[in-house]
Image (cartoon, rainbow, N blue to C red; front, side, top):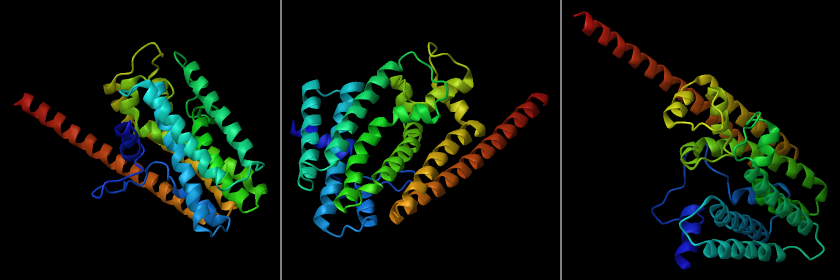
Length: 306
């Protein structure tokens, strides 16, 4: 069991790092865990280091709880009883961290209960998507449903920063921030994982659903890797994906700005710059590929003429 748990904290979620391991430098890196908890704590004027660490630790534990649960749902080489045990164990550690900060009558426990229910609702929704084609995989409705479990993970601990500082009136804005941010991140995550999702035939990938739609392929027909690569070379398709990411991230930024969460807005600004940089790079690569292909075709035609 020790080997399984270490896999999740050191490799799957990467809470623990080897000495030689460097943090990802890509501007479009995954969720900033546990830093979101620290950033919101700063925005709400929390200076107690212990409180900030417990909020961040709670965020880490709940994310760790989700990973074996996801793997149990998607399939894993580990035994189901091991995954179930770990999911519950990490969840209990998450609750324990928050119990240290909040009394039994705190509103945070209602938020956690509702988030847990939303998480289960998201899993049921994912099951219902089998053999079902989304009308618009980049729509707010589709993304809200597919990212509901992410919101369930992030929201209570971040709301805890407001509750701990007696600013309960700001919880609604945090909820809106988390919702928008997770919708944008859902697209980004599906974009990064499209190869694995294609191999696993993941029904809830909004990116693969978009590629199917643009190619006019029904759900019953497999989407080939070659066709997916060809569609990703279409700047219109790529621009559509990144525009949707930017739309939801900017909405999240507006909510963060209203909360005066300066570190959060700076983080989103850096991500937005990363999107522009990546789009520019892809455009240059496509142009270079087109020029190389034209030169090869021209050389081939010239060779035949000779």
